[in-house]
Length: 71
Image (cartoon, rainbow, N blue to C red; front, side):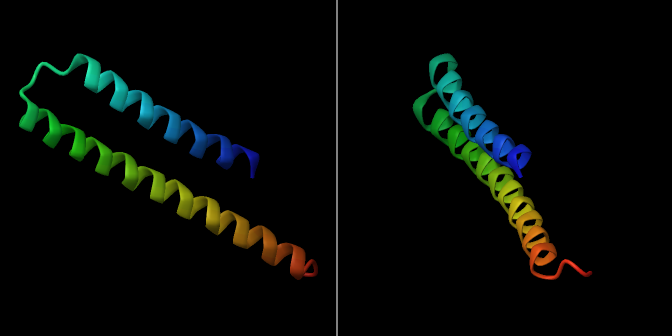
């Protein structure tokens, strides 16, 4: 449980750091740069949602085990 939470925190911090670095190092023109940022933001969101779904599934399994300890 703690491991997944740490992973989600890392994904979020990594995403923010990636956006900041991209902003500071962007050699492209405004519209190209915004398109790239939008694509990267979508990639980060997809990864975050995947990790959140895994976390939810793990928590549901844990809850089920606690509700039915005989299984």
